[in-house]
Amino acid sequence: MFNPTGMAGAMVALLGLAPPYRLCLHRTNWKVGCNDINLMELCIATRRVRIPVPWDILDQGGSSTTA
Image 1 (cartoon, helix red, strand yellow):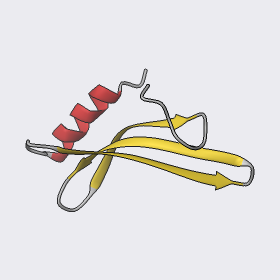
Image 2 (cartoon, rainbow, N blue to C red; image 1 turned 180 degrees about the vertical axis):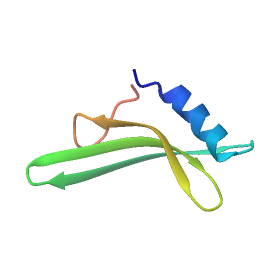
Image 3 (cartoon, rainbow, N blue to C red; image 1 turned 120 degrees about the horizontal axis):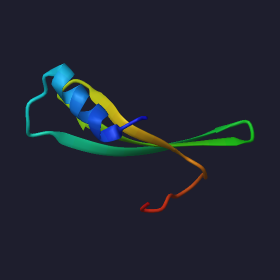
Image 4 (spheres, rainbow, N blue to C red; image 1 turned 90 degrees about the vertical axis):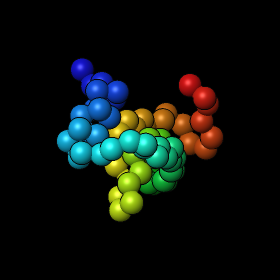
């Protein structure tokens, strides 16, 4: 089973990142034909790259809820 918390820890260890960490929450929405693709992700921000950790494909276009 997919575990986002475990994945975040594994990415930090694998990449050798040292605290403090900067986290960025990002949401984007695309329309492909009649389908909305609504993606929310949490990223670990480094000086050069943003590493997406957990992400979720939301089931609706537009705004999302806090859940």
